[in-house]
Image (cartoon, rainbow over all chains, first blue to last red; front, side, top):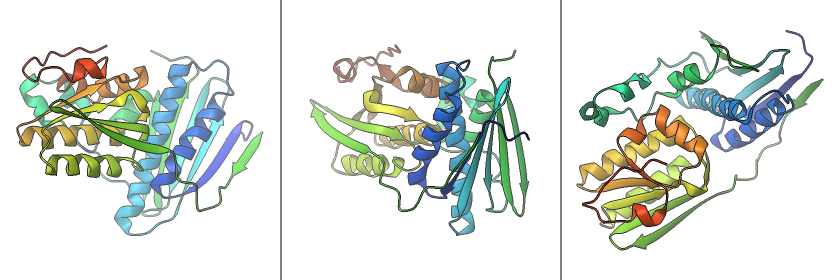
Length: 147
Length: 133
């Protein structure tokens, strides 16, 4: 990756740092004047979802480490990477598609587990690489939304 | 340009506040700040306390919520389930446009009435019309 326009932020894997991560990445993305406010809102949400997953992964393995966030302002897109070393990604929870079912079924709306579906809906590209050594979530938002 | 930021711990606690007011038969809970993994436990705890004290009709005033993610949305779903299980009702009011969007993506706006103002949200219990702004 070309390092031009790369902003890196490393935070302790604790919930109170989520706000800082969202604000810094959103502020970095706002440096690109072509990004509309709605897309910056998307980026803020994407960072929150990926970083929340990373922090919760550390909770599951019983430790507290650090989460690295990398934001690359490329020519036609913003690439975000969120890396943890917590050892693997939890299986995705119930799909958001439940929201489109009949009203009677909506009582079963999941309380957890739609972070990943939400990321897939908001990002133009989503890639999750997971191993025993940790998880990398790569999210791409194009400067102009593609069909 | 490459900027590397490594904040020193401990971090200053983020700004988040929670206001609770009784409006007739309704209890209005108004979180102020960002509703996420950091703040959701406080809202959950406060609502559980309110329900333990006997309240059954809860309005969550989202007017002061400037950020909501799937964790915060999940909390609203959990509160709705708890309130309904007790025979009560949950209503939401005053969401900002980006919060409206998350409510829609999570399907919450289909199962919880969302009102443009607190005054409309604390209307009669038996007149539960959904008014999404």
